[in-house]
Image 1 (spheres, rainbow, N blue to C red):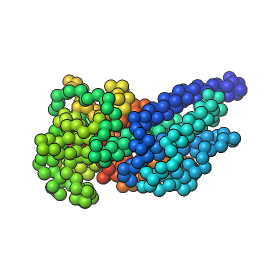
Image 2: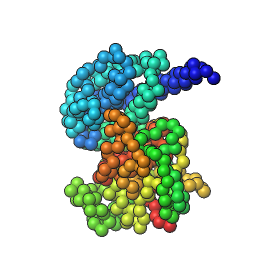
Image 3: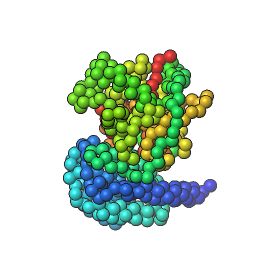
Image 4: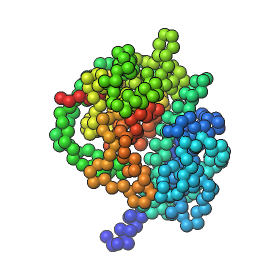
Length: 431
């Protein structure tokens, strides 16, 4: 085939990719806006703690990402929507420039929510115009794809941050009043499944999208072990609490015990005790704790203490990944629309359940680089690599993680004291 023909084939492939990306772009951007729709402008402006961000900031920052890393670098005549947004909505990209202090994002009463929504519309129109014209380079298309996965991360953060915000309101308002109740399921016993052992390969396989921290794929030596068939339930965690789990320092790592004492932890975040029983605050409001559902909103330190109390441990991320396949539409992720964890289904003879959805699963693995890891060049290299310190890996996604975003090699990470995510645990043990 002549070189000119090869170029035409390559151009056609890029155009097809651009067409698919345009459809995905509309879907992802539309979903983000829809997640903010049940909120008032006041809801969207407030920051309830330093680790959270206002919904208005999430809406603007994800737009800033596309404007900064795609449009400014690929469209010579593009004019930025507002020069001040360069600082206001830059999260942590030092190579791009200054950032508004994270703890003070809730002070940004201006621009108004309506102006942020106009910002989204303007950037969307400019980017879609180029996507549909097929004028982006292959490299720019890759950044668009990265930006869509980045936005899906912020879709989850919108809901986690809104939950924390609403929990601070004494009215205990629901995010949405039309959320369906969890399906009634009887508790099923947790059983052990023998995991793969010996020399195994983990990490992103190199086909399809993956964040840089998911690779390179590499060999690991896996010791004989077993993994629990489901997530730890509320009922099981209550047994830990009733056995004095929060009062027994021998169960806790030193840093965890310090947090437990200083912050007065006595139960998972959002749990409240009334005269008769425990209740938990969720996106549907304050409801009774359902014993068979997985426990969520626990820190790494709480998860680790529970595992010690139970005579087990947390799985390593390699053990978790080797037990997982890939998520599907049956998994309780954001696409299901329940926005709440559910009890494990009963499937006779099945392998481990709930590996995707319901709750992010703390692992016993610190977040560090895989052998041979190299961050991306330029400012986008700051996306993951610089956070590989003093954090732990979580796997599997939660009830608010988009289906098109999660996979077996996905590595989430948070500091050990973080509790406001839908984070739970699965047990493992040496065999």
